[in-house]
Picture (cartoon, chains in turn purple, blue):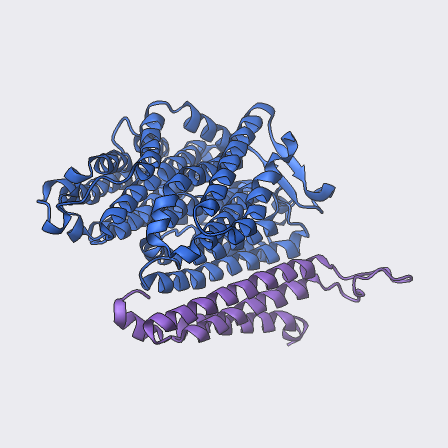
Length: 118
Length: 500
């Protein structure tokens, strides 16, 4: 039980990751797929941020009297990854808008029936 | 100046991309992109020349010393891949003018060239950088711009294929990100050289194993390694011809480069031998060669036929990696170079046909070979190269691959490579039969040869196919040097199941 509680951040990450991936694979609605993709990416952000934490470490801002800081690098990396994630979502949604315009639907199976392309 | 080449290769197209986007419509955006790609090609070739003469180039971004700062580290491997990318871009651009005008709406042309330059930035960035997280960022720059490029295709299927590629590509990139994070949590570094030093002691950790698996799956999705290739055929088929030429010749190749880097530079060999990595490569390669080639035979759309053939050709490269010997890596790198040449030539020829008749369906191309003799000639020669006839570039890579397989007495692999060539004879034969031996349909009676601006880049590539089939000092020489750099291990230590 201790093992579960002391690693709670990883359980959250794994849960979110599976929810996201399952949504991407299982849902036929193109918007829901993108939402799933977002949840999946957010779980990775959590993973990185919790990796950066140092036990009993302070926020990485130089202050007098503080010896131990958390590692700021994973946070900085994830800022970049968030930007990439936003760009991906924007592009994905733009594609969905165009798909809706030319097919009149955003359901995967209906699009597939129309021209076997998805 | 000399030292800055490695950075300039990334920065020049990056800065040019937004400028091109705001240039007035007309031919100015094309001209600007043309100049930029030629500058990049010159820089990439001088970079390769410098690396071959003076050894490894290490460039510290912003003067921050590695492993804390980002380091661009260029050796024979990435210098070669960077040259392939930049050279293909430079050859594609003259071809792009007419083909893009025909296939892409007028008002989107500046944006098209802008996205093209961003894609070039991403691909060159991946080859230059020595930092694992930086690889992810450039991977996403190139992927995002290629989703946009693919969605510019004329059919509405272009949109759905771009969407499908976006979902799969993002899952792949995120897997790569998870892997990098897990490795970072154990080593505390992202610099490839630093990782190579630290990982041997940590290789027994479960986290490192998991991170390795995530990275492998992530890159395998990007390079369309069988059975993770599902996004590729549609994406290549429905993208505009220029985009297909460029992506088919470069995008998967750069992903293969990253795969080589992760396998042979970052992770220690003992670690790889303790995992079934090499066997998976060999199995996946053999499956790709046979299954994707059979799929290719049954396609009625020429672009889809060639796309499936690309999946099969990636199988040959995976097989070369799976042998894990210097001969195998040399073969993989040589084929990486040669396949870029032949697939770019074939897709350009198909693009020329689309330029004239607006379709690339088998039914509509009957007898066009007589009306478009130069395009047809290019398809024949590039097709022979794909099959691996002596005197073409394709023969050289097949030769090295078979030698590498024989060295390990991997008889099944040898048989599969030769069988794959036979299957290639069938699908290229089908193409040639339709183009030359079937009677011309009425609607195609007045079709003329493609314009010179399409034919010249096409024939440059075709001549390169013949040249590198006769003179192998550049390709094989550099590839052998690159295999040395990757420090591939002697063959006797390999004891995979598939090699017996």
